[in-house]
Amino acid sequence: MRSEDFIELDETYAAHTYHPIEVVIERGEGAWVYDVEGKKYLDCLSAYSAVNQGHCHPRILEAAEAQLHRVTLTSRAFFNDQLGPFMKELCELTGYEMALPMNTGAEAVETAIKVARKWGYQMKGVPDNRAEIIVCEGNFAGRTTTLISFSSEAQYKEDFGPLTPGFITIPYDDAEALEEAITPNTVAFLVEPIQGEGGVRVPSPGYLQRVAQICTAHNVLFMADEIQTGLGRTGALLCCDHEGVRPDVVTLGKALSGGFYPVSAVVADRKVLGLLRPGDHGSTFGGNPLGSAIARAAMRVLVDEGLVERSRELGAYFKGRLQRIEGEHIKEVRGKGLLIGVELTRLARPYCDDLREQGILCKDTHGTVVRFAPPLVVTKEQIDWAMERIEPVFLNGR
Image (cartoon, rainbow, N blue to C red; front, side, top):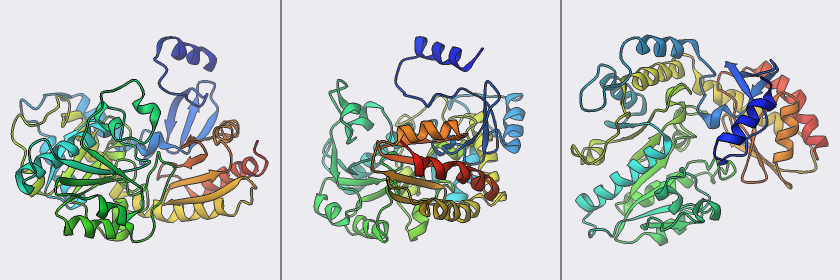
């Protein structure tokens, strides 16, 4: 079958909730993917930063294959021999006392919201059903009913009401707005250290330090959504590490499994996650032995192969090369590590289509931004190869 045939099947039988770049990927290895005709592309999206360790990393593949032959799912009705070690290793890696495993990033954020509310009622004394969580304009946490309830995108909400109450929205990168919005019923501030879907928006230096101080002063949980920015993507293990801040709650996902399997988690100290009791929350697949074994291998790869440091060094190089392009429609190049956005003065999608023709796969976000986020295993030589193709597109783009 040709690419056109697979696209036709997708368009005919799959609900139209995405507008994909027109390439049909058949296999991947490292930073490269190949379409059904055999053409090679440099992946500069990494499945929205889920493939930080590269496609089909052999060590993660080996762990997955071994576990597939043992047991894949037990449910949380029973213990399994992978979950405990996974939770321990995740806590040791991130520096928190407890973790709660889930599957998708959206589930992790939903979990964090529930935990924050419970903390507010039990520890802060907020009256029942009055808890408020402050969020930022331009956020993206997923498309469940609760998560779209605090989205700034009108389309995400249209025809999906009634929405979930209890959220207060303030401008991003505005610490004073946070302090002004806090009330006695505020239980948490939920923020992305860099807004990925919001256009790779990087806050001002010191912003995260200031909001951490404000949250501490007002007895409000500081919750960082690190699902896209965490696990090395920005050149630090957690993006918050750039400013030396330690959130009360962190959500993780995507690269936690290296792209092999849906694995996510909430990490926090015992004073927060320790409030949960059996029956408060759960997931049949959350913490399953297959996902746990894969995540353990994925974390080891991040550490053993120095991918955090690699992201910092090669991200600076890649961003520097992009900043030197003197395209008339380039407004700004910004980012940290290997999460980089090129903001244009016109729509970004045509540029992504042109880059696809040149063997570069990336995706537009927020209308006018081209996001570059290759796997952290990408090499300097591969970035140079990409730049030979990227620069003419931005110089001569439509």
